[in-house]
Length: 380
Ligand SMILES: Cc1cc2nc3c(=O)[nH]c(=O)nc-3n(C[C@H](O)[C@H](O)[C@H](O)COP(=O)(O)O)c2cc1C
Image 1 (tube, helix red, strand yellow):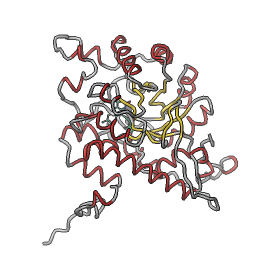
Image 2 (cartoon, helix red, strand yellow; image 1 turned 30 degrees about the vertical axis):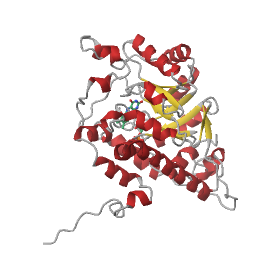
Image 3 (cartoon, protein in one colour; image 1 turned 120 degrees about the horizontal axis):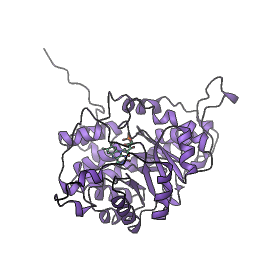
Image 4 (cartoon, helix red, strand yellow; image 1 turned 90 degrees about the vertical axis):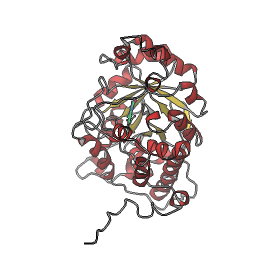
């Protein structure tokens, strides 16, 4: 019997020269990246926690945000640039913090930094960065430092102050990972010490029996942690991993200048709601008191437009950037970000918005029964 091959996600992706001829969409790029990754790296990257309900929900929730484009507007010139916490950006898309990137490419975060810098895109660098922060800073683009507060507060401060000294323009305190959650498909992760402690070289000497305990995430964060980081670094602080509007208010009252609506890409509490579903209430709760960013499942320029319409000032993108890194190093990262920009510009043009501040709730399909028949999410 003749076997019929399963269709590839993008039938043109396998043709010779296809990579060079046009940018790959998210699914085709993921497929290409997977060919370059070890089984361990693949599991680390793609897995979620539990039954992966949140991982799946993130993606689906964006698809369900229906847009209501505006017409009869002059959309000849489109400007997708924006400013977040004083950092000027060419578009409202930034690279999400992703740990241990040398698992995905020999140059790790240094290549990601170079790829992002090629377009002036903001790069949020993880506490679990697997290359020295100097290499990230050498990329020359704007970057923020993501903070896991470690049980050893002294080590935490040393990292934060090193990042500030090297040019990080803000801190992103990750609040949704008091413990690293169990991942069934990736129960353990083994890697060399120089990946694990790239920025804590004093701990590479395996002689310290407490080094695991000292570098584990602290489970006792409070709102005061925000003020502590802001005071000690002199940098604006964003709180990442917020889904509840009350937590957003508490974070802002405690000094957070931004909130990142996120469920860690489905990698912490499985069953947590999709970030797209949490976004409108958080945006409404915060109003103009702070910025709202969002991540989780954002895969196209249309998703970015949806996020802006729901009240976000910008988005972070995780796995797609790593697919670019794994497939083609810094060039691949730059290509992914360029695709997001091209798609966003087209989406803005087709939706009738020439500048980022023009993207508001009027672009959303109204929800029947709601006041004024308008969808949730303020106009910012
Ligand atoms: C492999 C991997 C490692 C991650 N490491 C971190 C991290 O070190 N710190 C952090 O705050 N978030 C981390 N995240 C979460 C991302 O910052 C982001 O919230 C998530 O990936 C967004 O979802 P997306 O991948 O669907 O775009 C990680 C995500 C992945 C996939």
